[in-house]
Image (tube, rainbow, N blue to C red; front, side):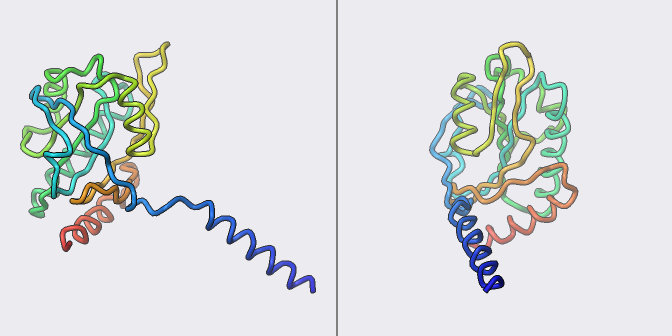
Length: 190
């Protein structure tokens, strides 16, 4: 009888955990947006139709993770070009009051001289990027009033051709590149 009670408890806990598990990430569609890129031009979801893209959140005055993240994004750009992957790269600034198009372009050219498939985006308010990051990527962006630094994710986000969120990757994990390559190859089959 005691064994049966344990089995029933385990089943109940398992069912509760399943009920609390969020929906699959693939079911999250990125809502249409149009912002301003490093060239001062409008850029948004319409420019990404039928395109696989990788996104991240950075800012130019960052004193911690943004430069390594941007260097890693430039590395992905080179790797994917060698593999002949048609992938766009999107970096959303989390400090739009400071990061105007010319500043973003200058920052970007320290990491890559290929601007053909990489857009750094601005043209929104601080409040708008905080809501956009939370609602579209389920991540936090927050600029404390007492600091010049912005709290934000250090992940890369893969979005499929149909605009649906596929997966997020922690760029500090050495195995993420191989995983992302496999995921992109799978997306390219569709």
